[in-house]
Length: 158
Ligand SMILES: CC(C)(COP(=O)(O)OP(=O)(O)OC[C@H]1O[C@@H](n2cnc3c(N)ncnc32)[C@H](O)[C@@H]1OP(=O)(O)O)[C@@H](O)C(=O)NCCC(=O)NCCS
Image 1: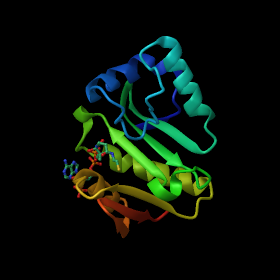
Image 2: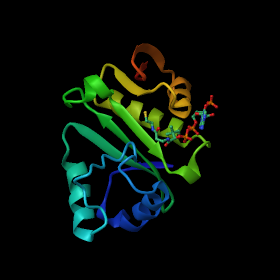
Image 3: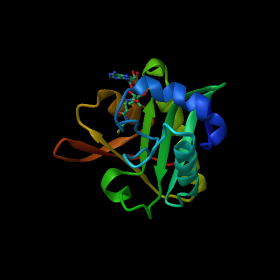
Image 4: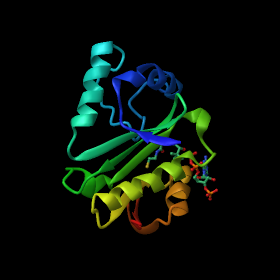
């Protein structure tokens, strides 16, 4: 597996993964918003450019060969939502879950955080999201708080 910078060249591979998620903007880790028109070629290109130009968040796609398996986002401390939503977000396409993809990608992103000099990384997820909680536990995350239905983890940076 590789973490790859989002690119126009990957449009077909990304669309193949996108189709598995179904409608809505719930593809955690991809930075998709309701304002992104990813169905058109120009809209896809604009979205990819926005991801690449974002100086407050690093986006990577998880790839294996020609296939996009998922996405991962690392919000920097300067990001307006890093304090509330945590630094990392991730999502794996439904057909590729349960085989270690997210754990691998989160570990890679922690290494990236280390290179970037980030002293600590946090993640926030819903208490009923057992897969996400297990992923964070597997990479060494420690639960440090809970607010309503959200659990906050601190994850050691290597
Ligand atoms: C959360 C998610 C990214 C996990 O991806 P994944 O590639 O399947 O995770 P992994 O295979 O690396 O598994 C990590 C851990 O989760 C566990 N796990 C995976 N799916 C699970 C499930 N449905 N229920 C409970 N635990 C699960 C695995 O057993 C593993 O734990 P272990 O090491 O104790 O065995 C994936 O389910 C997903 O994309 N969910 C939707 C988006 C999302 O919720 N993102 C996180 C937002 S905070």
